[in-house]
Amino acid sequence: MSTWVAVLLSTFIIHFAQAETSVTPAAPAPALTLKEKLKALTSRSTHVQSDNLIFDLPVTYNKKVSKWVAHYQGTRGSKWFREWLQRSYKYMPFIQAELKKAGLPLDLAFMVMIESGFAPNAISHADAVGPWQFIEATGTRYGLSKTWWLDERRDLKKSTLAAIRYLKDLHQEFGSWYLVAASYNMGENGLRNRIKKYGTKDYWTLIKLNALPVETQEYVPKILAAMLIAKAPNLYGFRDLEKMDPLEYEIVLVPGGTDLDALADHLSVTRKSLKDLNAELYLGYIPRQVEKHFIRVPKGAGQLVSSYVHQFSRKVALE
Image (tube, rainbow, N blue to C red; front, side, top):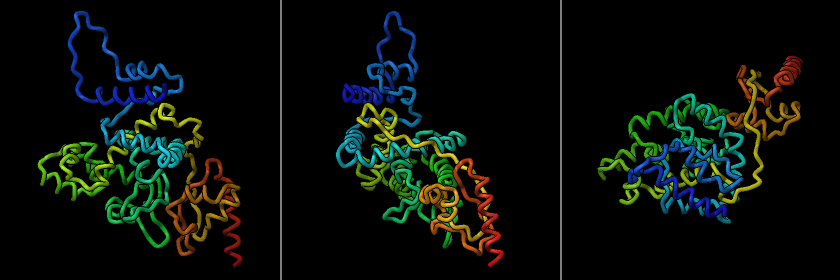
């Protein structure tokens, strides 16, 4: 039954996303909202959280999207996608809150799922880094610093704010969220040239013309497939997910020389968790020649950090 409902859901979405045409009945019934239609569609399954089945990006369901839905459900893809889904409960609310503040579609957060699986230290074959996979030149253009000890592309909040500015610029130029995603993947100059050469600003037409790199042809379908599954994971076979707690933290000021491993031990948290919170410190510490630096610590740990800083400062003074 779940597979049938998933197929029906996907079929419904594409027809709803396109212009709807119907014969006017003699006695028209009251029009249903999108949420009401989706709730009616998914009422057969008690597992579906139908409040999540709302999309603020245009949704297309075609062979390419279907292929990636099947891949993420399959033996090779399901392991990775399950991990991405579980991480999404931790990171997605934070990213979507920033997108909402900026007035952008919340579903753009699924780009991060496809770009990095929400891993702060992800590095691509093209040396793109961080959750939003910025290359160094683009990161610098949008205010992300990189030094021998610091790489702000790895910082979730700083990279999300930079990505928001970048996405706004791309949308102002290309006017389509599909083209925004395509240009984010292949670079705006490359997309600009392809649009000029082939005389179209329709993403799917550019694919039919084989005008885009193979990776870019698959990029938007991957995002759409991720959206469909993540909004109703039970329908696609992803049950009993280990839902991570939403990301929460405090920001504290610590002196140069602070080592994240030593601080994690003092706070009785895992070293990995503290390093993930402060992924921009990719060496794992703040150099002694840096006077002070803001870091993130688990919520409620502020006082413990203050005692650690006091002890650390006394130790340095004695040295």
